[in-house]
View 1: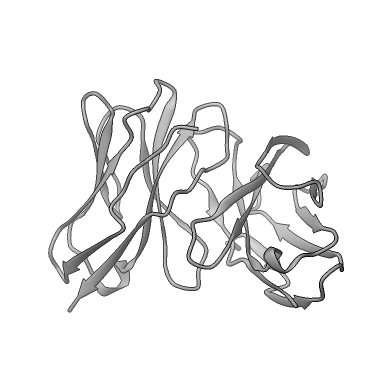
View 2: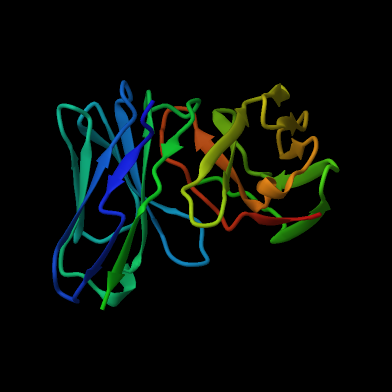
Length: 114
Length: 110
């Protein structure tokens, strides 16, 4: 069975540009969450979507936005990129949006802003 | 969000048991205790979770204190492939997001 897939795996962008990251959850999973992991730190929660509705938002500026599509895949968009946005962006899917379920993570997208 | 406290690092010998502690003195009644681990260059991987009772699965055991203010992840026989950062996380029952701390970096010596 396919796990959580993210694309692209790596990309390099210039300051001020916009980026779109994509995530396909495990088949049957309706919840998708996004995390940012800066080198040396634990992942930081950005967004959670469940059944195409935003269920949670972390402490990130409005430059970060996301959406979930009818097939439960998701996009994370970041506008006006800053050098500090360089990080590993992780997507996780779960069958439900509740706290008693496990999350399955993808391998991440490594974003470098120059 | 309820906080967890873990040692920054631990060492173990291969094929010996490992006990990874976690303190969560501000845990509420609806918080689940989750453990994830992250191997180098990979996304986090679910290990185990529990609410009140001890839990066992094929990867590990989770021992939860009676007052729920601490828990211990037990790897019964450490292998070199268990070397990773282990995160102890409190997850509100009604929510799906994980709040990661810095975790414990486990080194396994052959």
